[in-house]
Length: 368
Image (cartoon, rainbow, N blue to C red; front, side, top):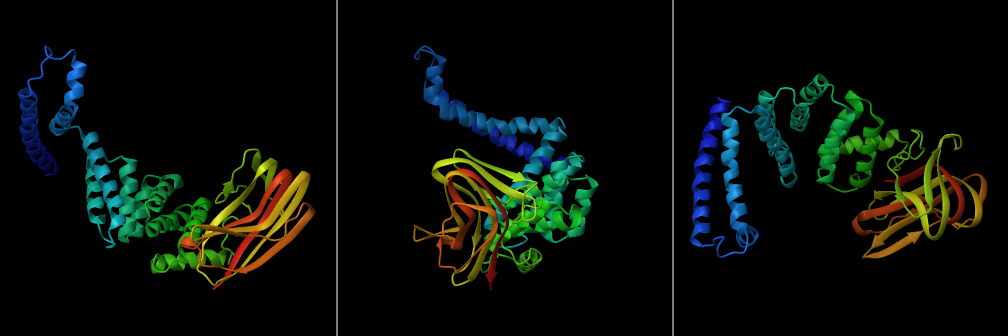
């Protein structure tokens, strides 16, 4: 039945394409461009390239229909899979939760009829089930093909990029809690909650509860991976300056490990930071443990915070220091202002000069 549909659609496209193609050829001929009137074929193409490309475009469905008639399932399966993914992208502009999901599932199921071993289609079908609310079928689909966390997280990241945080969080949650107990997925949840938790009406109820649970289990800390316990500085952004080096020190910390910033920073400042969206009027406690071994001319601003209001950059920090040879606790309290997009950048340390700085146990706690 499916192949009869292919052939019917292909035949229709074929007839239409031939008619349009012949019309284009006739149009080209009527212009009476000949090789005798032109110095070369290159000149002919340059003057008529739009018509020629259009003719090529119109003949493509004819070639496609021929391939279908010749029973080339891999091509057809790939096309159906692409149609499935395109329906996911179209959901970004649709407020209806069911929008395009049925179509996506339809295309992925037909893609798998033609190519049952396609991992790309099976992962896409699993996401369709997940968005539809059938978590069990989604998980079974992914487990059957032994999908990796990276494969599924990649599509969660895709939803995040195109502005669909709810679907991204749903995928991250499944990867974290059900299939892999994956630390990367847990951090991705935290990063997305940093950007959406304080925005009214953005998160669905289940995802708002997910973010609430995340922050609670993170010690009410809005910083993700603030203790660097995983042996990396994932989730941290770098204020990169030439000469600065960012590494994890597995031997030092409060307790170890800790992130180590070093190098020769002469003209501009360097540091690591995370961005958090917060509403105005909230009481915030920003803290970190810091150790410094200066070499020369170090200028260090602990607990540096930056926000932008009406296009103007506003900053604040604790009193500058030049050295602290032992691990020292720094804490700063302030009340949030009304910032553009509600975004605040939190730097445990912002510095310049020559030396080494260790940072550990960074926290941002908010009184709601």
